[in-house]
Amino acid sequence: MSNSIKITADSTCDLTDDLCEKYDISIAPLYIIMDGKDHKDGLEISPDDIYKFVDRTGEIPKTAAVSIADYIDIFSRYVEQGRTVVHVNISSHFSTCNQNANIAAKEVGNVYVVDSLNLSTGTGLLAIEGAELASQGIPAEEIKARLDELAPKVESSFVIETLKYLHMGGRCSSVAALGANLLKLRPCIEVVDGKMNVGKKYRGNYAKCLEQYITDRLIGRDDLANKRIFITHSGCSEEIVDIARNTIKKHAEFNEILETIAGCTITSHCGPNTLGILFINK
Image (cartoon, one colour):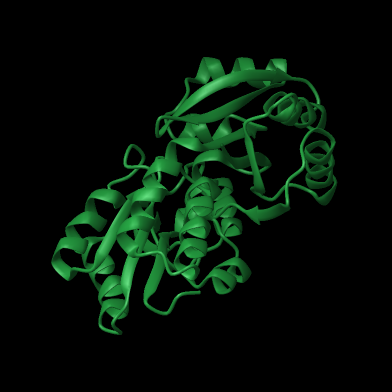
């Protein structure tokens, strides 16, 4: 990776430690608030802690953006080393992270902020693209411009096994959650224009629903940039992940199929056994 340019991203990018090390991407953690205490996402708390908290309290934890002070600290660390920072944020429609990062960038200087218009590894895809551009010696200003162009081409979606967490977070009504559970409906959540929408609703066995969801997303497509695709999930079984991987291979050819576990911020909203595929279109 380029020594003159540093790529950073929010913890919501859900990249593994190995991928962060490979691409020299550093993470700015959001905060998870439980029992009145702030915990740094991925550093001081894990998704298992989220599940235990929900089971114990019947509530989902609150989340908080990376603070301006935190961003200043992170950006300054690299700028003082003589590096220029390109930071990739979770969508500005989901969090004030982007607003805070821009304020910090003006304070520190030599920092370019990208609104990913996305979440989870939809943001991670852009961070990796930025790292690859940096390794080619592309200037930071141009990297930002290219990532801004790519952001609307990232396709992110997830199928949720249960609406329990969305209901507890006030994102769906009790009636909708009860009806979905009784009918075994598995809604697809899509990211469109930086916002979450409910797409197609699948019904029945979760494994079969996932297989149909991935088929719907990939079959007959000629607009896929086939470099890489992420399978990102919140604690799904190996069997479920294998079904996802095999279904991808059946319908599309990607150079890389990468698997990651959703971090605390995403998990606290979607709950366990959520799985999505995320990739970039041409």
